[in-house]
Length: 328
View 1 (cartoon, one colour):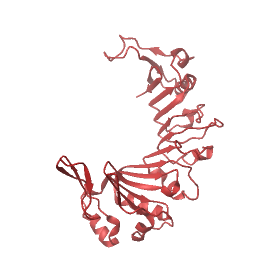
View 2 (tube, helix red, strand yellow):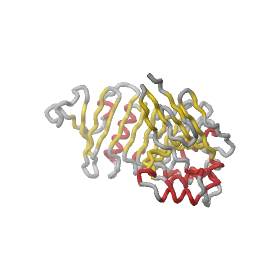
View 3 (cartoon, helix red, strand yellow):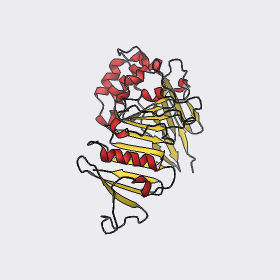
View 4 (cartoon, one colour):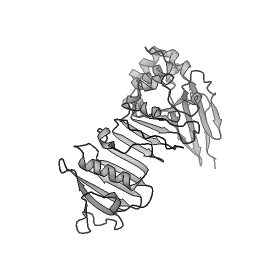
């Protein structure tokens, strides 16, 4: 019986994973940037489509900016990343526990790339996006973004499919309205996971995103006229809101114009009450006979509401602390 083991005889060998006497070959890691530009371009031109179609591009802005990186891949046995701080000193290839880890330098890599941008980080990210067909492109922000130092990302932020923002674990990041403004009009899909020590402001600017998520704490978001501001929003998800907040958003949906919002999830602070949620709202409760599903949870209350401008219907359901809205 063999113990699980990861080994690499040479830097460019194909890594193997051995378990219970069987050998599992891991996907080959092509060290593209070590080749001269003409050779690299020739390789890419002769690749099959599957070779250049990669799962994800993940750019991480960590709480310590010297640790900013592009995470190329990360699994149980292997991790490789490109360090984005020009002054960072990548660690040599090493094995931590049973995980093979490798770091590359943005400064070293861009020596092989001819691009028009002054910032080497912008050159590299543009090159990756134009060379490989990523299924998803994500930006994960764990620190305050700086208008000057992070300009290269602000310039291309709209090319990311999803942006994740969190200050959890970063005690030095006390968010201000300016921290939210940098994402306005730049992101289609944004996820906030925030803890705010002091509730000193309500953010009332439009993100103009299609999907907006707020986890842990949503108290920073101004609920008043939210749907009028976010007139491009298709999905909304808020955590730790009040029943009164939900009532305001439902009222906005009913009284508003033909907004594109078609789904929303709300997690309320305390137990739900339809008397509060539907205050001053004409809602029709669906009884068991009218329910289209025979397995409808009897503990789940389901209502229909209608938008005044066009009669569009939405289904609102809630159990305990979860409230959902769907409109198609």
